[in-house]
Length: 221
Image 1: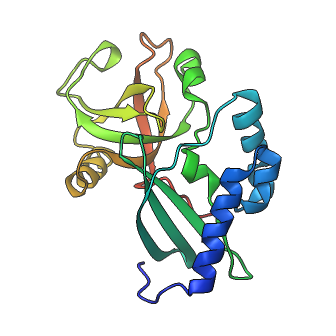
Image 2 (image 1 turned 180 degrees about the vertical axis):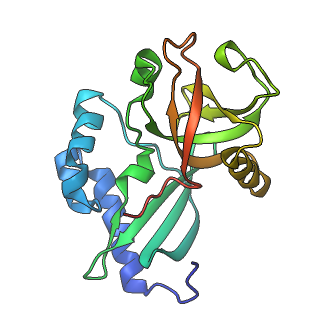
Image 3 (image 1 turned 135 degrees about the vertical axis):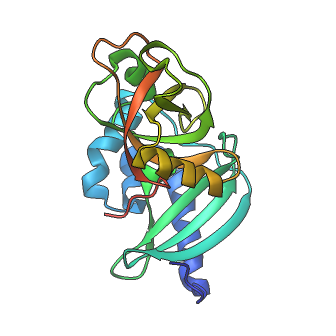
């Protein structure tokens, strides 16, 4: 729900300062004080920065700002220019009980259950959460070669370096949901999905879409 009231100058200034301190921090532990729900995301951040040696997305110039609520949670969203496939980097900040805003780290970096390099290697058959840039496609192959049975969606990783094709049953509720989303979005839609590979998958770039979690990357818990 969009909020018509403006965020006070003081709160906005504090939010911008929080972002600056996050970007300036040189270790993930130094970044923690500026992250929403830090206790829960500690293991995710440790894996992201230490185990997989991944980097924060590169932020360009400021593009726009939005203030809204999701499930009674106040959110301040900053959008910056970016080399991501969408052309933007969204930094969602969640209001804390004291009124200050902290960064929703998972939506900012596009966190997935499995890093994309491992996803294509392991081909998980259990539902796996991914944040993607999605658009409709017409590629049908391997287990999903029947274009009368399946609808195809091109799924690109948050950093734009990897892609796979996701499939859902044509005419299903999920198919209709995705088509409705694509009708409202120009270009690629930022979606949070669950995907699963077929047993003994013939390819690392064809998986089934088994759930539409949200039509955005921000998940308010």
